[in-house]
Length: 304
Length: 190
Ligand SMILES: [Zn+2]
Image 1 (tube, each protein chain N blue to C red):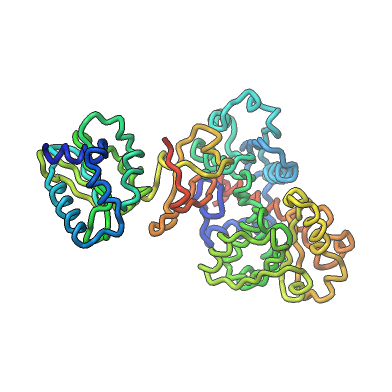
Image 2 (image 1 turned 120 degrees about the horizontal axis):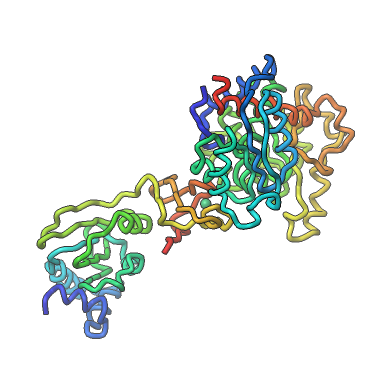
C-alpha cells in the first residue's frame, strides 16, 4: 500500500516505495483493469500544454474505466483572468477524485498538493520535477534489463538543463548504477547532482563523446540539445553533430544495450536506428501507460 | 550617566564616544589599550536592563545587521549595542540589549537564520529568566525569500518554507521549488 497522498517529487520516495509502484505497474499489464477505477474522475489541469503527457494520463484513466475532465493551455480557463492556482485547485477538488497537473512555475505542484484534499500528481512543474517520467524510465530499464541494480547507464546530450536526467541520476543512484555523463562541457551535469553522487559513493565518469561509452553500457539515455541553450550559435554548431546517434556507432554495443529517449526527438537519433534491436524509446513511451495506471489506481485506493 | 545610557550613546551618538568607538574598531590594538577595552566592556556588562532581551555571542560583523533585521530603529526604548568585544569563547563578539521588548518567535528565527549561535536571554527585574543558545529550527517559515524567480512563492502569495539541509555551514532547501540556498545567499523577507 502506498502511504503517500500525492506524487510530487522523487525526493519524497524511498526505494521501497518506488519498487512498489513498479511492481503494481507490472501487475497492471497482466490483469483486466477495465473497471478498476469505474466511476472515478481524473482532472487533467495542463496550465502548460504537453500533449504527450496529457494523452498518456487520459489513456491510463480510460483503460481503467474512469473518466477525464480538464483543460490544456492557460487560455482555456479563468487563469487568463488572473485566478490563482490555489483557487483553481480548491474548485477542482470538488469536481474530481484525482488531479494531474502541469504548470510552468517551479513548486506549483507542491502548493497544489498542500491546498488540495484530493491526490495531486505532478505532471511537470517548471524545471523542477516530473516524477512520473522518472518512474516510467525506471520501469523501462527494469523491463529491458530484468533488473535495476548495478547497471551501467550513459546519459547523453543536455545534462545541465535536462530535468529528466537529473531525476534519473538520483533514482539510479539508489540502485547503485555506474554512470557516464556524455555532454559538451557547457552542458555537463550540474555540480549539486555530482556532489550528491559522490556522497552516495556512486561511480561516475564525465565524458565528451559517445564512441567511448557505447560498448560499455546497458542503457544509453539520449536527450535533445536545444539550440536556445547556447548564447553563441558557433558553439552550438560545433557540438550539434557530436551527439547524434547513428547505426555505425552501435557496432560496439553489447547485445542487451537499449537506447532510451524521453521524446520528442529532433535529430539526435537517426531514423535508421529505429529498426535496430537496441532501439527502445517507443517501448518506453508505451510503458508510460501501465506506470500511470498504477499511480492513479494506488492514489485512489483502487488497488492496495 | 547610568550604564544603560552609556550603551545608548555608543549606538546612537558615536561622536560623544569617539574614543571608545575608534578603539573598538581597531583590530591591531596594543596590549595596553586591549586591557582598556576589556575594562570598558566589563563596565558595560554591568549595566543591566530592568526588563527586555539580551543577545550575546553575536559574530562581531553581524551585530548591526541584527539591529536592522529586528527593525529596532522603530523601538522607542533604550537599546544598547557593542561589537568587537573581547570574548574568551569567540575571540571577538557583539552584544545587544533591548529594553522593554521580548522577541517574538518569528523575530528569534530571523536572527537564527543569519547568526545561528547567538545566546538569547529574557530579562525580568534585572535577572535573566530564560537563557537559551539559539538553534536553527527544522523548518523556516515566512522568513527567507526564495532566490529562484520562477518559484511559486515569488509568483503567488504563498508563505515561503525552507527545510534545513545542513546546519553548519547553513544550507536550506525550498519546500516548493526544491532549490538549495547557502548561508551567504540567504535574503530575508521584510
Ligand atoms: Zn523556491
